[in-house]
Amino acid sequence: MTAQRALRAAIAALVVAQAAVVALQVVGRHLLHHPLPWTEEIARLLLVWLMCVGGVAALRHAQHPRVTALLRLFNERHRVGIEAGLRLVLFAFFISLVVPASRLTIASAAERLPASGLSGAAISGILPVSLVLMCGVLAAELRRDLAAWREGRSSAAWALG
Image 1: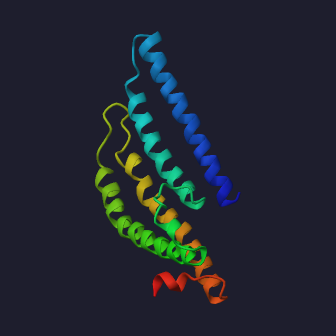
Image 2: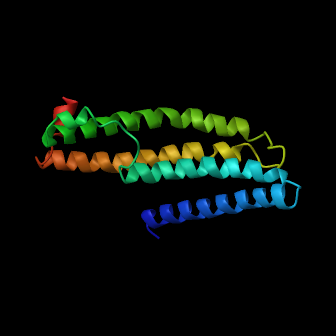
Image 3: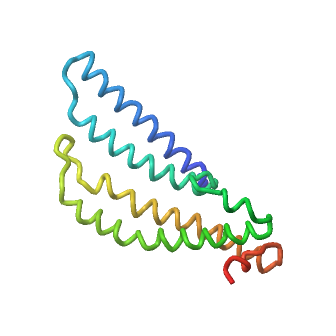
């Protein structure tokens, strides 16, 4: 299975699981008049995981939110270089967050969620993983930028120097 297919499958599974848990929550509250206490915790957990996995997918397809108003002022040649510089900054930012996210996961491992009994690491464990995956996406893009620059087809050096 390719990385793209695995990412899509993970997102689909998370969306289906989220819908099922929320449906159980609604049925428990409104039809049975007896809410299932663990559904709220699991729904939150799935939402965090979905946001992180979705962030990897959005970054991979350049669909992440960003402001491009200033970028549009530059010609295409310079825009490519600025984009490469922005990827480098984003890479450094994500790398700087991996260790604190890992520490958070380790610290929360001993905690238990009250209704489900799951470890607190079940929620925070996706953070360092998604940060590393996003760094991988950015590293691949930066390698392509560097290869294109070496071949003279890009102005990535314009933004960096």
